[in-house]
Picture 1 (cartoon, rainbow, N blue to C red):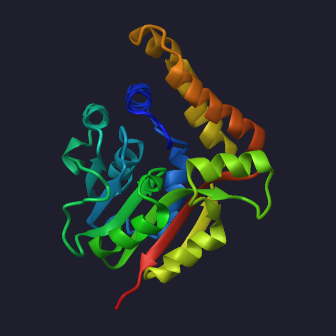
Picture 2 (picture 1 turned 90 degrees about the vertical axis):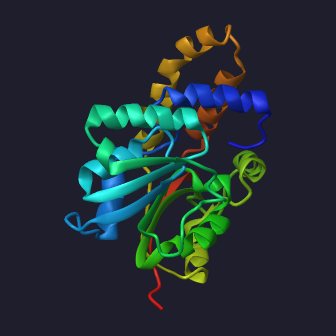
Length: 253
């Protein structure tokens, strides 16, 4: 989300801290992206999960792969929650947390076999992210990200205006793929997150947190209203946008 005042952002961070997901997604879809990437599940891998939130992706990757995962987020309270959940899932030995902004990562060139980012790259912009993060991948390494994407070339003015305000980089998948190609990647797969990733996996659990959230904050309604506005937009215009999952390989030069 963009165009928020500091207090709005703090309220939303508190609300999302207690959610298993900070955006649309699902375990089946994360596994599908893994399958499309063709990662060897028996090989030791180094993975950076950038914008990891409370760890839905990082924990699943730790369960599915023989991997050393660096989970990056700029909100320390999300990382606290991730560490607690990693303990519950028995994968603390595979996940290291890093409190850092995604646009100033302290990694060295060629550090990682995989860079993963679900629903977070928009914070620095898709093109800036795929360009900047490329240096941290080994040649032949995989970039696996989900990004808000138009599902058609034409859409109603209301939803067009909404997203032009919230995230001007929203575009159709072909434009996103062209960006990947321009910045040294070979696109390998693309698929769209289905409705249940938004409704059952994200918005419904968020609704279930509203009462406790409002109680903590003296019944303040602002953050709840922001989330409900997003829900209304999605339910009305779900045929025109979703998150697209993009899987690409860095050129071997």
